[in-house]
Image 1 (cartoon, one colour):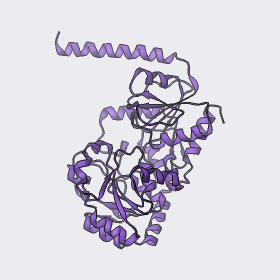
Image 2 (spheres, helix red, strand yellow):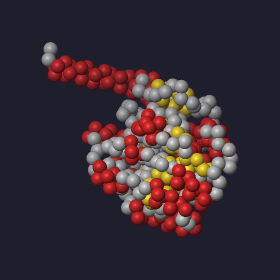
Image 3 (cartoon, helix red, strand yellow):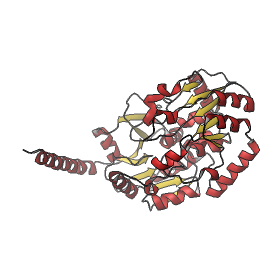
Image 4 (cartoon, rainbow, N blue to C red):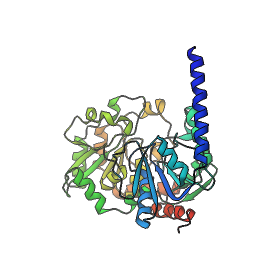
Length: 387
């Protein structure tokens, strides 16, 4: 048998098995109180799904909260049970759930039944990089998956007018969009001493030591040098301008997490890429330095300083992604090397920065009161007939 005939036979057999599985899943009874959460295709307890789950746990003890996870040892709170992502059990949980909550256009998706409710949280409240239909290059298989996901989605939400319009025009989505805060931003808008202490205890930081969080975005084509940060002069500038001792936390994108040790190269950098929740790191940080990451817009909600270090701006624009906003239209000081960054930190004007942030937020219609988790929990409980 030729390889082409063998491949054709295998594809037909796989298709037949899927059809049989979908028929079986379709007749399984739905559990009204079951809610299935997915974070980036099986990652740990994080992003908006985490904070929605926590709010539901706070309110009710009679819900069956399922977390799809690739790592069955991932830390989850009592009341949230892990199920292996991608396995038959995961399909069973999805088929029998009353509600799906996902922040990613997952490939692990079965046909939605009548009466099931799907909330697509997405994974950024406002991104700098163009994405979905606005992106220049998208894999055709992703586009098919995104369209299928959008057709199944019942609800999306946004904390700004700009993103709301993008959902309607660039995400292949014509369903309901409500305006509310993003659940994960609650700890940024309403600072938590517990979260701050949790981060400091993890990294053995005294209360009087301040944190500069360096969080560069992922590049698909750049080498390791694009992520390197020589923090010494910038830390000294922070200590001079803001007072107190500072340390630099290094938080890499998960796609390059394994190369953290190559980037550190200095006792001034504390590796924190393995910390499970970026929002908690931002909540504990005093200063954020990033490049093209949407974290800049969420950290802006804290009122604390954001600085941009765009060493490879022209290369990034040419080889990676186009941006929604020109750098000169952003409210954040921007440097192209560490020397420039240190100078910007030294001359930082908090009043001018605050006014620029307010003007920018007004321009994009951003309002986030930090209560997004409560709003989405209300939606879920109402759909389940429990509110």
